[in-house]
Amino acid sequence: MSQLMLEAKEAMEKILTHIGEGSHPDKETLTARLQNSVKIVAQNQNKIWLRTKKGKPMAEALQAAAMNMLEQFEGEASLSEISSTMDELESQVKMISEESRKRSMVVT
Image (cartoon, rainbow, N blue to C red; front, side, top):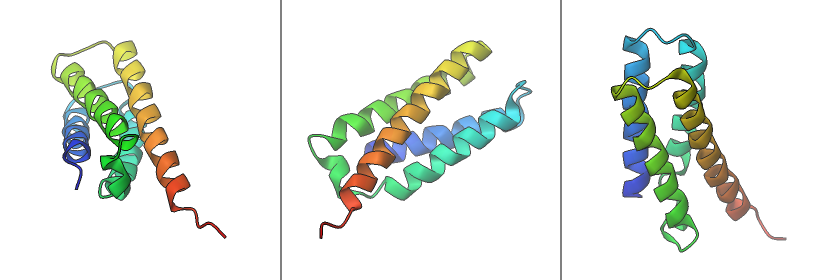
């Protein structure tokens, strides 16, 4: 299991807890977006390709984005900063999901 992916997933779960306890204006939207990202990370966290030359930087970028977002929630960042970081996090998750999809295609 990729330690970076596990750390990213744990950070995202902590963010979900912060959102649930807080009173953010976009609480429902952020929760839905983050839950979707957690689901995709959980589906891909055990992929072997994440340990490769191409996969490790993707996992590192995802972990960094998740930790950055967690720090923002713990530090009471502005909504625009949180939204920007959420976009970055979703972008990293999408790249991992897309790469995983490509690697799972069957060559005929």
